[in-house]
Length: 336
Length: 153
Image 1 (cartoon, rainbow over the protein chains, first blue to last red):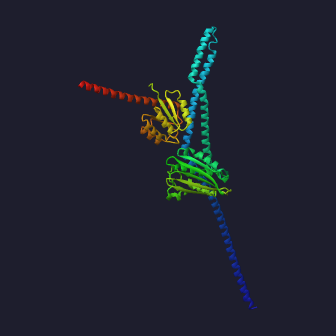
Image 2: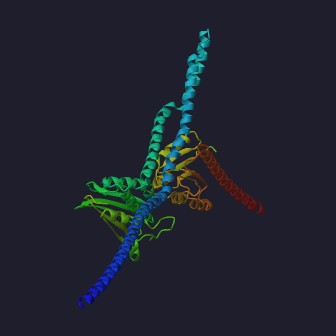
Image 3: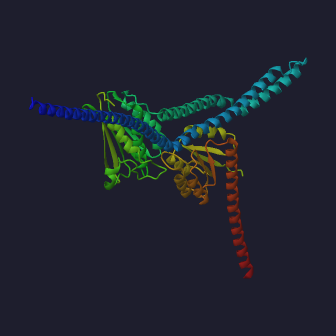
């Protein structure tokens, strides 16, 4: 028994030690758990913040895209004003002329009415004939002065030309509105040649004073892409081409199907890009233009839009010969 | 002046030219029209043009450059610029260099345009009359000198 006592003592001491250790461990685990939970909450919050940041970035990216788009619309404004002022000029002048024509026609109708009635109240046949002859002579003089034959033919031309002018204004405004509307992120089947024609039409007022536009559009399958963003890229290339012309030049636009890709080439005969800055042209805010002319974002956005379509944009340029941009877009449905 | 006066309108827009022909059909001067720079210079070579109305923006040539060519061919021509795009610096310097008599914006006011054209023809007549009178004075002076010489003998 005597040797049991110390062992019991020892046991109870050990037990106590173990209990203490257990308590310690429990405490430690509790602490660890609460720390872990805090950490988890922190992580959760951080994650949420990140998600919000990504969302904000996405929105700013869209806004940037839109601002750049509006900046190119701004560049087009002067050309559009000129293009609208032309038809407005001749339509309003034609309307003024039309009023004169109608005045002539009205006078003739009045004179005809008068000629029909003139002298009918006379009882004397001679007097009637005299008054009637006078009225008819007046009418004839009026007809001659108004040159009714010319007037009738020209009336049609005047109306046709004016209606044509109105149609043109309508198209200019519709094209521009179509282009300016906010980009959606929708991807749909797009005929690239059709998109090119629409974009050329928006840039036309700018292009036609600078360059002859030569199209060589091959047969293409429709491809899945975002037409608004792609049109923005194409407009950028076209405006750059136009800005690169010192005097009259040529802009060639070529499309082809190459294997699983659609290839778009926009080439100009402008001043070209110096070799030392060629690697920088896709950098954001890199520009050789004045603040008034460019944002320095056009080509950067072009590359990011093409990248998001799993495509590729490349450039080749020779000073004083010209610059050529080549875009490759996959025909298959991209995830972007 | 009984002599026939001629106006040449140059614009790449047929619609503009035709509306001008209509507007000016009852004026005292003839109206010629040209669609581009080459046509204008050809018409200028074949006809006695006194006043030109030039579009500032044409695809084949800038209006002010065309005007320089016209003036080189016929220095006495009076020039009016008709523009849809007021590029003020460009136009002001052209007016101040004396190359352009008047400047009109598109869309124009019909009556204003007519008044400006009449004034320009009037100005041309005055300039012409001045040249004629100077020539007359020069001749008479010459005659007078000859007479004085004769008297002196």
